[in-house]
Each structure stands twice: as structure tokens, then as C-alpha cells.
Amino acid sequence: MHFTQPRLPYAIDALQPVISANTINYHYGKHEKAYIDTLNSLTEGTEYADMALEKIIRTSEGKLFNNASQAWNHIFYFFQFSPDGAKEPYGELREKLESTFGSVDEFKRRFEEAGATLFGSGWVWLSVDDKGDLHITQGTNAYNPMCNGLRPIMVFDVWEHAYYLDYQNRRADYLHKLWDIVDWDAISMRYE
Ligand code: MN
Image (cartoon, rainbow, N blue to C red; front, side, top):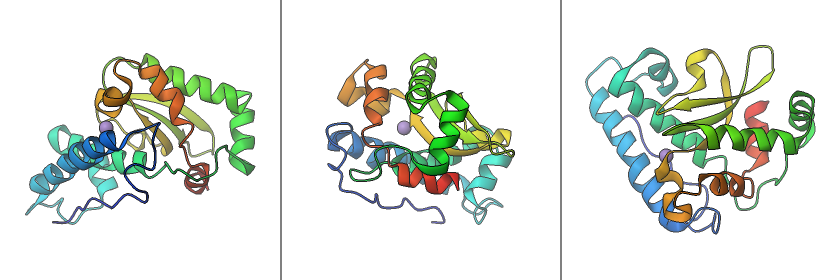
């Protein structure tokens, strides 16, 4: 199998109470695993078998795109959290957030709003363009901004499977609580 699911860099209960061990078990242990298993079965013996995941995302469509992009998106999502990372943005990224959105609080408000108002299943993204400017974008289903020439640095999953066990229908509460576990060291490394 070419594509493997990386082990999470924290214990399954490390993100509680924001994300429960139960949600990690289902979301990472079953949903994300299924995307990677399906990706392997779709690519085995094809030209995609040894291709970088990012290239598959940029060049495929349909079922292959959906599973490749969901595999990537979930790794990107889970690896931006930590129980003990930097709690607030700092340095160059903080300055860029402030100059783009007015303040870090206003950035967070707009990011939450983009997640709360996305109709159906999808993702809300913070990305950098080729001029270094920041953009908040929504995308439905398996969308990834790299398909539109942007470089993602942060993402919140707004599929119901990401929050329903812990927050039921309260998507806005889930989005607001995620700031408690975002690891700004990880986001800064992506930004640089
Ligand atoms: Mn998900």
C-alpha cells in the first residue's frame, strides 16, 4: 500500500474536552482510514500508485479526487492541533493576520462565520496566495484550495462527522472551541 495513515502526534484523549476520544476514534480511526484505504484500492496498479498525493489532488476528479483530497485534508486538519502548542498566533503571521483582517479576534470571527455559513458538508480554509496574502475560503465536500493555486495553512472540518458526537447540531460552538487546541507553532511553520 503506497498511502499510509500517519499516527497522530498526541494521545486520542489529548484534545478533550474540545474533541473527545470518541470523535477521534471515529473521525480519524474510521472516516480518515476509509479515505486512505479507498485511495489505495483506486490507485493500485495505475499511474497514480506512485504519484505524490498533492499531484493526484490537482489532476484527478470524481471518486479518486474525493478520496485523495479527503485523505490529505484530514491529515492537515488533525496535525494542526496540539494540547500544548502555542495558543495564539505570533511573529510574522500575527502581523499578517492583523494587517489583513484588522485583528486576530476579527480573523477568528470571520473564520468561524465562514465555517458556520457553509451549507452542507465541507471545509473552511486559511491559505496564502503567490503574493503572500492571506485568504479565508469555504469549500464543499472534498474541496482543497490548492486546486485554485492557493497554499493552505489551516483548515476546520465542518462535515457533521467532525462534531456531531460532541456538539450535535451546534456547529458554531464546535468552531469556536477549536481555537483552544489550534497549535500556532504548526500553523506558523506552514506559513513560512
Ligand atoms: Mn472529516
